[in-house]
Length: 88
Image 1 (cartoon, one colour):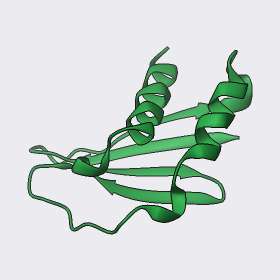
Image 2 (tube, rainbow, N blue to C red; image 1 turned 90 degrees about the vertical axis):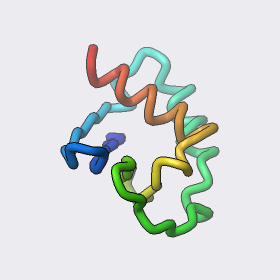
Image 3 (cartoon, helix red, strand yellow; image 1 turned 45 degrees about the vertical axis):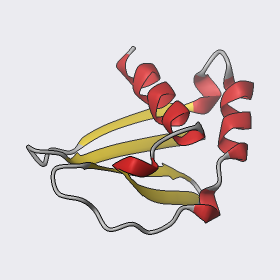
C-alpha cells in the first residue's frame, strides 16, 4: 500500500511530494492502524488561504485535501511519518 502526501502553496507556491510504501516499513502494522483510524470521510472542504499550505493525501481508495489549519492530530502524525520515511 502506498501513501502519497503533496504539499502546495505557501509564499513561494511550490509543490513538494513525499511517498512511502507501507508494506516495506518495519512498523507496517502501526502504519495500517493509523491509516484505518483516520477520518477520511469527515474532512471538510475549506477554501485555501493566501500564503498557507494545502495538503493532498492519497492512499487508495482514499483521497483528502486539507487546508493547513486542518492538519492536526492523526493527520499531522501521518504527514510527519510519511515525510520522515520518504526522506530516509
